[in-house]
Length: 370
Image 1 (cartoon, rainbow, N blue to C red):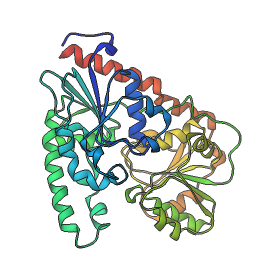
Image 2: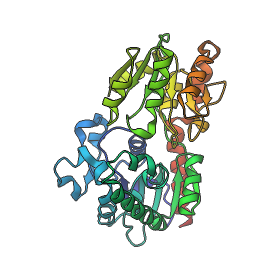
Image 3: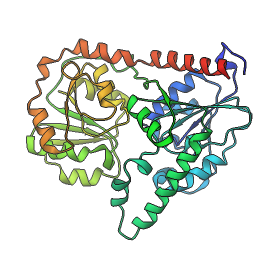
Image 4: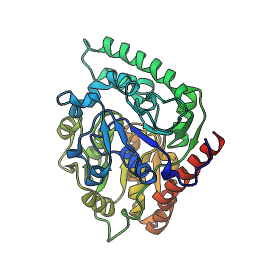
C-alpha cells in the first residue's frame, strides 16, 4: 500500500468491543475517531443513553446482537457469543482496520488486502489472568460450564491473534501479556489523558477518593476494608454489580457517589487528599486524570500504575493486595510533601496531543512498509 500523508483519505474501519458505559477504552476510541473522523465505528452493542454526547456524533454500527432485548444492559453475560459477532461483522471495503480491543474486537474478519492494527487494552483478562475471580463469583452449578467456555475463549483469542498485522499495547505491562499469551511483540503507545480538561483548581478538601467501576477485580473492597479501619473520609465514585455488597460493608465515613458527570468527577479529583487506586490495572487512566488535577495517588504497586505513578514524586505504592498494606500506606502518606505543579507536569507527558501524534506516526510507518 502506498504511503498516504493524508490519513483521513484512507478507508478506515474502527472496531470496538462495545459502547454501553464510559470507560478508559471508550475514551481511547474517541481519540482514534479524531484521527479518522469519517471512519464508521463497528461494535457488538451500543447504548447511547449511558454515554456522553461526544459519542452521539460517531457513525456507530452495532451488530445483530443489538436486536436481542436488554443485551446492552447485560453484555457481560453475552461474551461467549462475541467471537461469532465479530467474525461475522461486515467491514468489507476497509483498507485499514483499527481495533480497540479488550475482549473480542481484534477477532474481526479482515478483508483481503487490508491492514489490521490492534490497539490492545489487554488480552481478554477473564479468560487468561482473572479466571478464578470470575468463576468463583458464580454458583457452583454454573462453574463447570463457565470453565469450559473460558477454555474455548482462550483458544479462540490466541488463534485470532494471528489475524492482527500489528499490535499496539497501552502499557509495557500489557505488552508483556501480549508476548506471553499471543507470542507477539507490541509497540507501546500510552492512552490519552485529557490534560486540557482535567486541571488543578482550588484547594483540596479532607476526603480520599476512589474512582472505579464496582466489579471484583478492581478491588474496591480492599479500599472499603482499609478505610473502615482508618475511619478517614473516603468517597467512591462509580457503579457496578458490586455496589450493593460494598455499601453493606462500608461504615459511615465512606460515601458512594455513584456514576457522576465529567464536571463532577473533575471536582472530586481536585478536592481529594489523594486518589486511592487499589487494583492491578492494565494501565489505568484514572490515576493520570487525578495527577492532571495536581493530586497524588496511593496505588497498588503492580501493573500499569508502575508506569503512570512516580514513587515519592506523584504518589506512593503499597505492594501487597491486602487491607493491612493499604492502611499502612495511608498512615505513612504525607500529602503536604507532594508538589501539585510537579504532579501536573508529569501527567502532561500523557496528553491527548502526544497520543494522536504517536498513533499518526505509527500508522504512517506501517502503511509505508506495507
